[in-house]
Image (cartoon, rainbow, N blue to C red):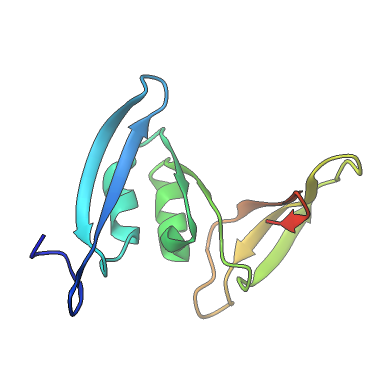
Length: 130
């Protein structure tokens, strides 16, 4: 993997996979080097009407707006430090694992804030808040 330069003496690659859950098969696969950005691949993998499930490396507020315009759906675990501006809070069942449910704008106003509102859900599993 001479193309997958990571650091001196180390080669790493990332796989960006679009997986069709209904058919249980990979739909699209892209490879990048270990230092490569993940965000551009989500746009290439998702088609309108599809839902992407992503980790924090895919968090990009401008892309969240774009994907909504393109009718692409997504679940993305975001960084804990992300600023959230609540537009409308939803009632929470006290017996649920859900601890927060609201329509929000993500990011800092005037810097990187989303233009389109998103649903933000916080939950707790085995004592860990997500």
